[in-house]
Length: 360
Image (cartoon, rainbow, N blue to C red):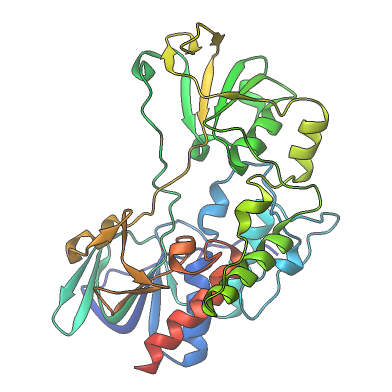
C-alpha cells in the first residue's frame, strides 16, 4: 500500500448535507463506511494534511498490540505486513490511506473545524474553509491534539528539555543523555524500552506498573472487553481489563524487561534545574523529561453548544449525546462504546451510531 494525499477542498460559503463527520482518523473512516452503505449524504472534515489520523504522528518504533487480522476497520481486513506479526504505525497509515480510496470516502482536508452551533433545524459546522449545515454531526476528533502534562513544583525552572509523548519520535537525539520517562501506561513502557539501549533512562510512575502476562495481546484484550460489555447488557458483573494488568508485553517491552531495564521508581516530588528530586532527599540528574501522561478529548469545537459535561465530556448514551441528540461522539474511549478508541472497536461503535442517525 502506498500513501497519497486526500482530496483538497475548495472554499464553500455554506454547504448543506445530511451528516458531517469531524475527524478523518480511524473512527471517522469507520463512520464513513457505514454512512456510504446507508446511502446518506455526508462529508468527512479532517484537519490533517494527509490520511492516517494520529497514526502518522506516533513514534517510529510503535507497533500494534494485535496482528493485522485482528485490527480491521469494517468491510476490509488490514493486509498483513510482510515479515511482521504486529503491524507498524506506518503500515496502519498506509491501510487507512488505502481504505479511504477503496470506499471513495468524501474526505476534505486540510479543514480545521472551529465551532459547531445550533442553527435552528440543523447544526452549523464552522471551519476555516466555510460552513457546513447538517442534520447530524459525528465528532471523531480523538485526543492526540490535547496532550496532558501534570504540574510539578519547579517544572518551569528545569534547564533541560521537557517533551510529551506527542513530541517523541526516535531515540537517536537522546543518545548518551540521561532521560526521565514519566507514566505508568503502554506509551511510557514502550518509549522507555526504545531509549534504554542508547540513553540512561529512569522510569517514574505514580503507582507500581502492572505488567500483563506475556501471552496477552490485543486479541485477548478485545475478547475480554466484549465479554464484559455483553455481561453488563444482561445485568451481570464481569471482570474487566484491569484484572489483566496495564501494560501489554509487546516484544520491545518484553526485551527491555528481560535486560533488566524495565524498573519503575516512585513519582518524584519536585523538579530541579538539573534533575528530579524526592522528599527523602533522593535525586536523579537528567537532561530531558518525557511526559507519557495521557490526553484529554479534543472537543473545543463543541463549546458553542453549551452542553453539560461529566468528566470533561458531554453526557452520552454510548455515542449519542443526551443533551443534543443530533450529535454523536465516536472513538473517545469507553465513554463512547467499549474499546471505541481501537481500530476494531471504532467500527463496532460507528455501526451503532450510523444506525441511529439513519433510522430517523
